[in-house]
Image 1 (cartoon, rainbow, N blue to C red):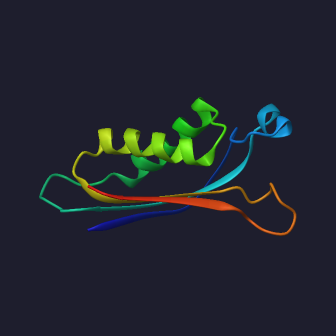
Image 2 (tube, rainbow, N blue to C red; image 1 turned 45 degrees about the horizontal axis):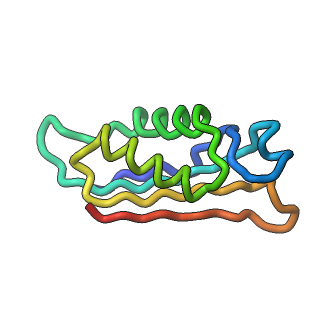
Length: 108
């Protein structure tokens, strides 16, 4: 099975620059989970979205890369049965002419 969360939108502090550390900025997060479905065991996408949002808001990362690695640990701990994870964080308002993003993928 594949579960996808697309364009999860919220505000959090991620960045190195002084103005990025002062106020939360808009983030967009995409997550793809793969797992073997068994009766009674499923990936709760509402819970996954909540975990992503709460973790990124709480931790206030400097680098997107560190945020992604931390998210992987949190999500794998909560959903140990996932076999594949892809996470992308976008910062749509940091540059005037593009939307930078970083993607992390892992097979378990």
